[in-house]
Image 1: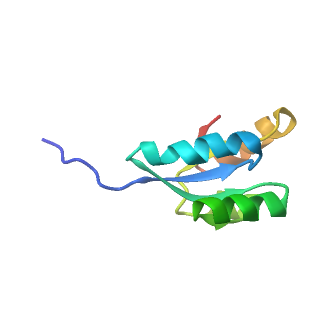
Image 2: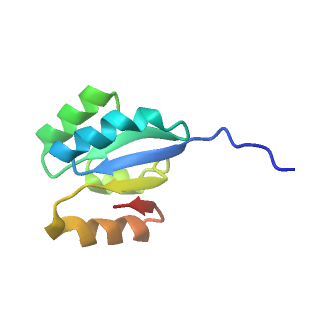
Length: 97
């Protein structure tokens, strides 16, 4: 019989626009995950969301390189969506888009 893991999946959000608030606000409803960081092309938006939700503000490259991030929640605009998803997968991260 296997034990139940108590390790939470570390989530990094890329894309801190309006839709991010819905995801960030509802993340607390899921016990197996932990929001850990966010990134956006706008440093101001990154800082705002990080402060609002008590997570780290990082650049995209730093978020993708962070070993505490297991899954990237890609909330970027359509024009950036493929590149961010590809970069996250290339960095060994799971991706939810």
